[in-house]
Length: 197
Image 1 (tube, rainbow, N blue to C red):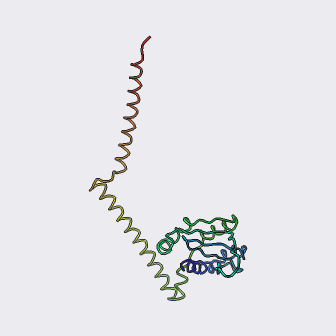
Image 2 (cartoon, rainbow, N blue to C red):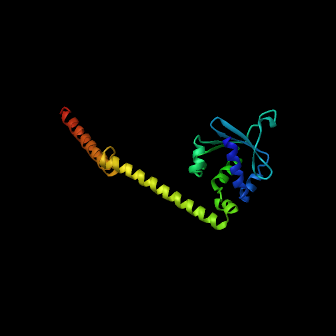
């Protein structure tokens, strides 16, 4: 259920990028498989360069895909929160040439949300909505960063559960100095314990 929706979203973005469709048209007819945990969707590249889901009953014998794209288990959450991170976490295996093209396409494919919103609410409203959404995202990111800093400060200074980096560096240097002094002392003791001729 989720993978076909993702497939429609990918095709929607592909339709807005002629360069990506042109790259995929070169592999027209080849099959690939999208995997998310135990869910698998066989996909074929059509003559327009779009990804089309294949039904299991379409062919009597299962077709070996040229490429397998494995998505991480947390893909649904990442699609909502950070879709760009999916590119780095998905694995693409199989035909080197097709995998290379798919990897390039997924890394460079961008959804123009403003363009899609403009069709519904108009150009000015779409621009303002996208700008407001970006500001809200920046604000939320800053708030999360501030909250994380506050938690670290609390456990470092108030509770003394964590150690600050400077203190840890000083401690490590002190241990190294002590270790060197101990090695020198052991060497001197060994020299003194040797029987003299």
